Image 1 (cartoon, rainbow, N blue to C red):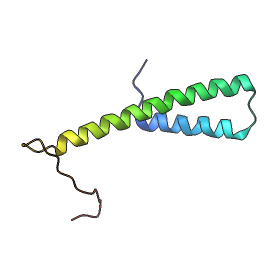
Image 2 (cartoon, one colour):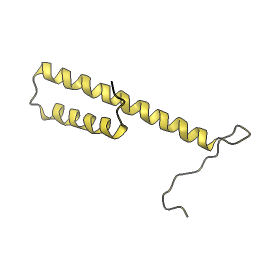
Image 3 (cartoon, one colour):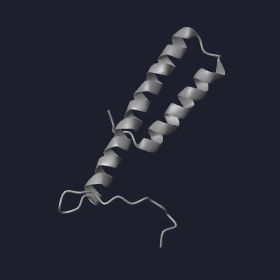
Image 4 (cartoon, rainbow, N blue to C red):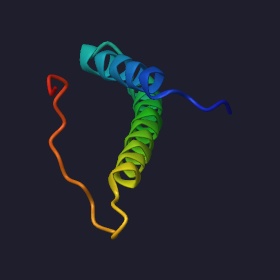
Length: 76
């Protein structure tokens, strides 16, 4: 299986939610769509956890402490 990008999985998850919320699926189809949604939710969660670990690694100081700073795109 190819590694899916976060953006692809989040879009597929949103599509699954929309289909389930429509109320137009049979029970069997709803279960299939729900299962797909859970798969994409897990992919998104894993990708977010990986990103968090990378950020923590990047911010870790030589003494083992972490530099904590609020992210703000407007910071100069």
